[in-house]
Image (cartoon, rainbow, N blue to C red; front, side, top):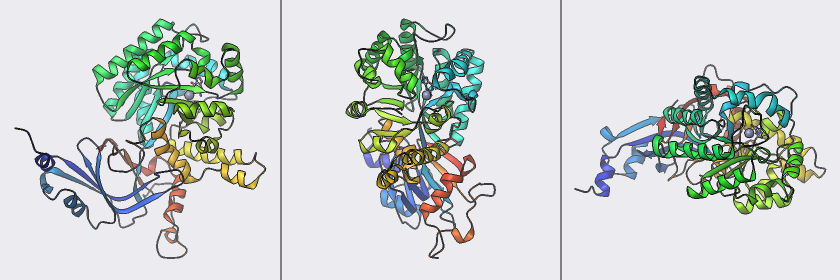
Length: 473
Ligand SMILES: Nc1nc2[nH]cnc2c(=O)[nH]1
Ligand SMILES: [Zn+2]
């Protein structure tokens, strides 16, 4: 017999999270909701939110008066006496990270992009063909990103399909939401780390088939990954574009306009294209599901192309400083209507934490502002703490074309969350008693408390993590 909708609701399991919820629904906006109950169904989707309610069971019964509270409900009560100190915050979204480069975090010396690739990066990536090494590295990077509150990541692996499948399996088993991309590069690469055009396309297809038909975890998605134009032939890029279309618009990720020498090289390699961005446009790789890492030196027509395509930018401020690439004009991109999120870009970036990356985005925007004469322009270039947190959550979700599913706490979205505690014995934030938000004039606002966490916090403050409503840390 078919269940009625009501019977289904009565029998269904539900989790009700209760406490303080903080998120950034749009750039510049910090939303703080206290004494709030958030109901999450078995699929990990938020089904109700009730603000300012005395207890979570009242909110639940309002949502469904017939529910059997004893059997079908799990309450996760994190409302503390010290309301300011423990709060749910959306899981961070890393829109650009090379899982395979994790062992080199912090190793870049004085190199810049092209010699860094040759000296450090290609040899390391090649070594992950050994599955036992790949297993160690990939297990560690997933553990590390999760402990820093990253619930979704767009990963690059290497050119090797077997270890790429292993990475997808590790993410699935550990419960992280991930886009997994086998790197494609069929020219201008070392002999020991290069594939033919045919191999690159075949093995990309093999990884897609594994993720879709064998792994079958809806949280794990394949993403086509032409490394960057200099290492991809026109045939390869055309082939990948076809592959993306044949699977109903697959995600694509690549690098764009990171370093001036790289840009000159692209001009030489593609004399028929009007710009670096035009290369990806011409070969069908610029879609509303394309993630473009860096975008430091874009011209106005390139920004227009990206905007029209609906592609997103992964801003990687740590890597851009470490490899001396330049400063991305994040505010300008946002003003022009381009989606921007944050990428750790491990190991061009030395940290796998989006909180550290957001901090760096904040600082880089101040360096950029110093180049402007006009006081209004100077100020406008600066990203606030709240802006940077937006980029690490909802901004990133928009870049992945998942803005309606991830990034904030709203009905219909997935419950991907971290629980932040900024008043535990070993935490590094150090809020003093007179700073605790209260009626007292000297106390801090919640925005100031968030600012202390933003600049001083680390993984010790991320005490739990949920993806799709399931606790995984
Ligand atoms: N930062 C960075 N830029 C790239 N451009 C091409 N490959 C890479 C890479 O691995 N890291
Ligand atoms: Zn990168």
